[in-house]
Image 1 (cartoon, helix red, strand yellow):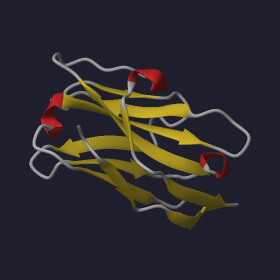
Image 2 (cartoon, rainbow, N blue to C red; image 1 turned 120 degrees about the vertical axis):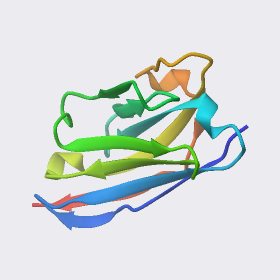
Image 3 (spheres, rainbow, N blue to C red; image 1 turned 90 degrees about the horizontal axis):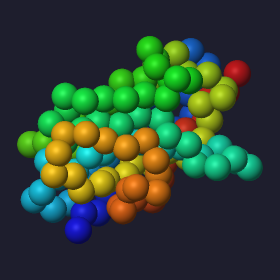
Amino acid sequence: QVQLVESGGGLVQAGGSLRLSCAASGRTFSSYAMGWFRQAPGKERAFVAVISTSGNNIGYAHSVKGRFTISRDNAKNTVYLQMNSLESEDTAVYYCAARRRYSDNYSVISGDYGYWGQGTQVTVSS
């Protein structure tokens, strides 16, 4: 199993930046594809970004492509989400998620992920 703890959320003005971190417990972090999802008030949880076990395969939602960057440090058991040029539409609770994988692919479907963090609030003021 793996336990996930997000940090780095907060209040930022439109156009600003935040860096989210997700620290994972356990010694097999490199065996998990890691994803970031977000849920805005009144909306369903939505895919944001994902990174494969090796970090070689990465995917982004269209709405964040070019503004957000996902990365991982397997030595530190941590995945990051660098968010630049933030917009009010980015306001949401951000969750990281882990999916055990035996290949270097990934999924953008939240139901495929078995482990979730508690979430961190990101609020972008316009």
